[in-house]
Length: 549
Image 1: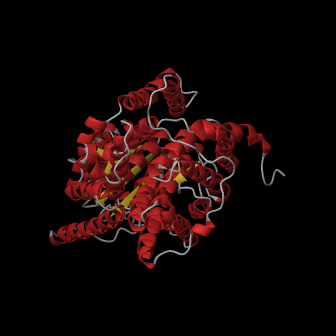
Image 2: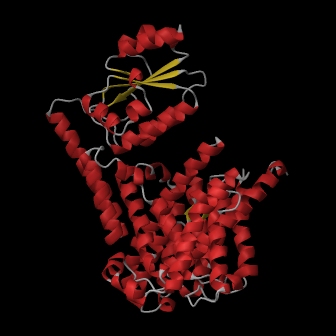
Image 3: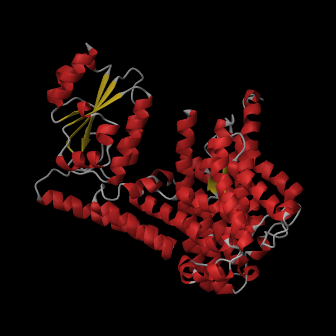
């Protein structure tokens, strides 16, 4: 039996799963409402993805379910399907078939090892897209916050903004504000109970006992969800393009969302996830969510973190988090019907702010101008245009701008050779003497060519493979004429990891542009002191000899 499960982990898995389930409950309801399919769809999705992504996925401690980015795409799909079919009932075939196809594409991604390529998305594209998703969540919750039905698009919300002040419900606004306050203040009192759950319960009870007339979730179907396979077909031919487009974006976004969370879980548990298996598990979960009428999901960062912190160590913990939500559906569904929609809006608005990449905005004036332009363009297209177009245009623009930059560097006579390796592990001629004497304590990595988004994933993997007895790492950048925003943050992440291992990082041979970029975001001197930056490799050797001898 121990071969399949070690029961010494059961207590931690049970606690972690329950805590993750408690955290997921209010968000599942809120994401379901925001999707346009209702709170029940949020719970159904959380149950299916939570249980089956955990059982079949490749990250032992992953807690999966509806997330902000996936819900925004689902909501956009629902709005598009409603325009095509007129009513939610008629549109369900298009919606659920898209969710199912998205899950199938994720499984294909896993089988074809696409996970290895998902990591190569440029940072400005991911940053702009995620920030746009955060803004969409915030903007679309403004009307529900004052007790009104939200227009279907961000542009419509802005156009109809005056209606909030003339038709808004003061009681609903009071409950929404109370929810936001509790969400932010309660963790200062204790973190033992999730603030989202406390905010949901307290604000809902206030509205219920004071008998305030505010819009509520309404009836949630009791019992096990029914199969929706009879709604898949027939589908009108004009919907095929919509289904394909949204299925691909759900699959890509769900994969990125899940794999980023998997990396966080790896860092916390000192384990390594299986990326391809993770995508297969997420795909299975999303297919089953579609079959029972639930919204799609991905690896949920907050749920995964609380699961690990509460003791979760195996995939059973993630599955138990989904089982907990199933018991809530079966036992407390009637109580959830009384939750005010303004309370759910009060939960989602802080979530929207958490998704926004404030770090990327903070460094907009410091990073290369091309990266800043890509980030802003993707942000604007995501927020006010098409989510699909935002990603496609962002990746294409980032690639074109990088090729132009490489061409400009070549015309200036700079060496822009291929970025395919660390130029080998053997020491260069001017390093041989130092290498022979200190090779057990000091590692020298040679970067070669432009350090851009296509190389960052490989760089991170290489940095993780340093020996246990290493005391210092020299990153030699004599041949790196250019570094982009993705490269900057890859260096930053690597240095933060090395600092936890008490490994000193030293830069040698920095050219003008990389040096200016590292200084502009304060990596030098905040992470790497000025004393660890040398224009020539000889200076680094003299410094290290004085420390090691």
